[in-house]
Every structure is written in C-alpha cells, then in structure tokens.
Amino acid sequence: MFKYEYTVLELMHAGCLGFKSYRSNKKLKGSSCFIYEDGEIQIPEKKEVASKKKKEKKEQIKIEKEETKRYYKINKSYIKKRMFAFFNLKATRRFCKFITVSYPEGTEDDTCHKLYNIFMTRIRKKYKFVDYVWVTERQQNGTLHFHMLVNRYLPIWEINNYMKIAINNLIEKNEIQYKNGDWLNYNGVDLSKKVGTTKAMAKYITKYVTKNTTTSTRLANYCSITVSRLFSSQIFTIEELEKLEYTDKIKINKNIFFSNEFIDYYLVEVKNLNFVFKELFKINEIIYNL
Image (cartoon, rainbow, N blue to C red; front, top):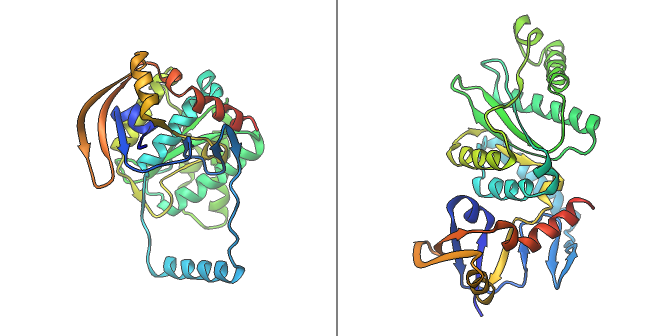
C-alpha cells in the first residue's frame, strides 16, 4: 500500500501534504541518532568503515577545502523541521527566548564565527544543559550576526560580557583589529522584544528563515545535539489520514497543489496539531529527557 508522507515543515509553513509512492517502514523520521520501529526507540547499528578509507576521505576533504572556498546558505527545510521539534517540547513551550548576537561593522565572516564559537563554548560550560537553534543573517552593513533560540534563562548582561571577553582576547593575540571603543563598549548580545509568546515566536522565526538568503564561508545554521536527535516528521497511511479527516482533525484538498519529479503536494488544514502528532511529541519528550 502506498503511504502519504508529509513533513512538519509543510504542515506548519506551507500547509501542504506530500504523497510519495514508495513504502517506508519507519513511523517517525528526522532524528540524527534514533529510529522508531514497532513502537520502540532504537539506536541504529553503525556501519564500520575501514580506518584507511576514513583517513583518505579526511585528506581529500582537506585538499578540496584548500583548493576551493565553499559558501554555505541556510538549509531552510532542515532548520524549519528542527525548529518544529524544538518549539513543541514542553520545556520550550514553558520558556523560550530569541537572542541576537551582533559584531562591530566590518568584522570578517570567519572572525564572526570564531567569536561565536568561543561564546557558545563558554555558555555550554557555564550553564551545562543549553539547547538551541541558530541561524546567521547579514546586516545591511554587510556584517554577519546570529539569531539564536534558547529554552532556558540566560542572563543577557553576563553572556554579553562573555562576548566582550572573547573579542578582547583575540585583540590581545593580534588576530583582529578593533578600535578600543568597539569592544570596551560592546553591547551586541540582545534579547529580542519583537516576539512574545512561544507560538508567536514560532511563526515569526519560520517566516524569517524563509526570507533569509544569507551566504557565508561557514555553516549558516546549527542546533544543539539534543535538538538534532528529535524526530521532525511522521508517516501516515491512507487509512490513518482518512480517520483524521473523519474526526475533523485535518482537512485535505484532493486537488494536486504542486508536483515535482518525486512528490505530489496537496493543500492541508491542520485543526489540532497536538492530536495529529501526539505520538511524535510523546517520543520526542522521552528522547529529550534521556
């Protein structure tokens, strides 16, 4: 029997349902560490790769990086799925903040990323369990800044000082050149007041990511390991979807809205997200609290 498959991204943002003509034995998808089969969370077996092949592959990647400079852009599909899983955690629904990290005008991309990595390493060590999703954006002056979602309290004045220290350390090592005022008066870590509730934040960020076309020489988006382990999409059989329609939880327009080589999309209205993804949310809570 064919199965409908639709991603959370399509339901949340585009309001679409995808129909794929292949069989899948996985009920939930999107986790970087787990599979869910026969009602159980399992860790997939890792395929052993010969150490010689690993070494050759690493050397090849290093050569390719030296020969060509790769540019990254936001993986919109991936990050929206991660955000869906993140926003629907109980912990995130209780508390979620949107933090922006900016730098003095003219700071090079590599320096922005280096400072941000130092900053995030300090936060992880200081506050232990910090889960997050972040994306980059290029400001009007051309300098990168970072937008980060966190689901625990971080004192802005303190983490702002962490970045100030990171900038000062690189200045002392002569790795970056800033005027004294650019770092002594640094106040680039900001708590956004544009969005209030978690639901409003989810809509705002989803819309923001869709319009983001930033490219840089480093990763343009990332999430904590705990968030990457969560499942982000669910497989439904035709019978299951018909049952959801019958109970008035979803409404599917039977006319094809959009097609490509692999999939047909149908417009969908989801009336009760928690009911439709009850299993997905339950499993994610278990994984999140492991």
